[in-house]
Length: 329
Image (cartoon, rainbow, N blue to C red):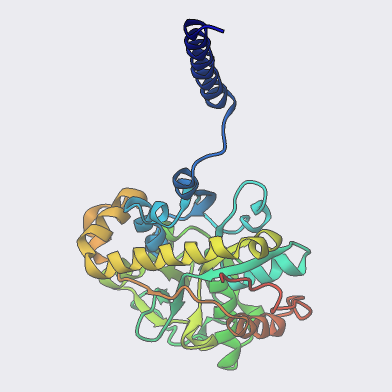
């Protein structure tokens, strides 16, 4: 073979190789190639999360706004709801993480739902009260026991606030079964009490501060009769999902801690984020006291509530608390 033919053959082979490389690249582009290590590092875990637009859940809202979730490898989609009552049954279907309280969790597990507590959110303390029972200034009600035979407006019969109040009444020697409970939303409580339709209300911040400023009187904070500090709202997930995704839970808590760090370092920014998500006027947002945030959760915190609920006849005695608390790595 002549040198010209050899050179020509080499050129043809080179052209074929080049065309093959282009074809391969196109195929990989069209059909998808294995991502490079850098691309893998940028992949994020999607989480469908429910929040209630109040200050209790502010660390998560701040983490979303400040990009902290993304930095920790989480792609969080928020859904706003007005109440937590029906959320346990949505886990593993509509949502991955939702807020709840101890009575709601324990009742749900006792009724067969496979869910678990995965992270704390707030605790109630004597130095940081968010829930109080309020009466009119001229009311003769001075203590929890005095509510026997009275009408009390609650956010929900069986709610953590109402369970705590009934416990406090019994603790003072009263008969909780003789308290008439009526359900109603927090914003309407002041008007209902003022009009005399009820004798007392179970109120939450920021409405507690507004009602105290309007002349109503507090007879106490029943959650603190259960314990001080005492577990208040926290996060739950499908139990099987939680056990398989402890690393994700670690990132979730780290993100909440990051949000809390922003709250502590820049109160103005944090409250601006709360105003955005809650829709409350700035003057109201500025007056809301920050709750005591604590993202740890343990079976011992739930045991306190289980004992209270068993005293009130809730069938939660057989719930295995060790199995329904699943936290990060």
